[in-house]
Length: 437
Image (cartoon, rainbow, N blue to C red; front, side, top):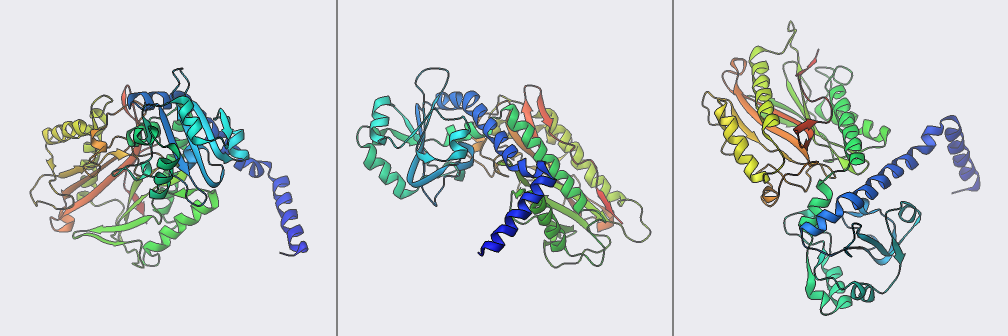
């Protein structure tokens, strides 16, 4: 790059920051918020997560170019060959936090760690003499499986006996640490949820869609541009913008042109401050002469709302996620709905058919905490705790005369927190089918 070009870029950045000081401070503001979340999590969540799982030392290994999935949670930093985040329960109300072989301005200034250095790992561990050492290995939870095979071998070699044989999976510790939320985290996640909602509802409007002209992929790319302009990430890569008809899903985020009479859905999530949402919205493209959603489709939507209210009133802290799934299905069936036996396979009977998948959400669109969803069998065994975030997700199929008696598939999904009072929403949830004129 030429000296002239460097000067021009520098002058431009200086001018932008001078014109808009808030723009210049956005990066610092976001870092400060994440640092506060990290300190709060280490203070209030980590001690219980370690002690409940009988782990008195937790080691997370990072290498240059091979960062653990918890790299953001634990503070990032610069690592050369290899580094370790080490958390030790030494009996006080505070877990000792050390970063060995990891440094850098953002890590050292965030105030979350007690010790830094390149101390000998074997000596560091021996001085603390842990009985059970949690490491990031898991067959069932990807975010808890960050330890590579070669890094595991290296740990065994460095630690030697007896410590190498004291290593155990930290998957339940990691699930608890990530899925139990502090106030600063809940505030940030609610902001992410509101951003998700605003962008999705604008996407299903005439601001973006011109019937007969706009393709599904055009809507998805508009949403991606919104993320880019706001400095946000995406939970699931490209947004799913799809059309549902009598035969099911007809097209997703493709060249398919949106036509009048189409029933549109968006399934997506926003990433903000290392927190990721998962939500859906529904829109209907009015035909010529129509002023409202056809009655049969509207009825199908309202049946979905009835099911969602049952879920909201039923979920509580205390049971395991599997126990809660059984309870929910019983309550939904008692209210006159049929529980679907196999996802997306409609029986054809007269009743509205329902399947629920209220999964964990938070640091991933599909989180690693307790999940009231059969597709997460291990997480079905986890106990629901106050402050767990859930994506309250359901699918309801109801027959509609406008579709010749075929069942309309209504997906509802919004993010919520479980408190001592039960389910509480974090932003305005879906209450209507959006109209595209």
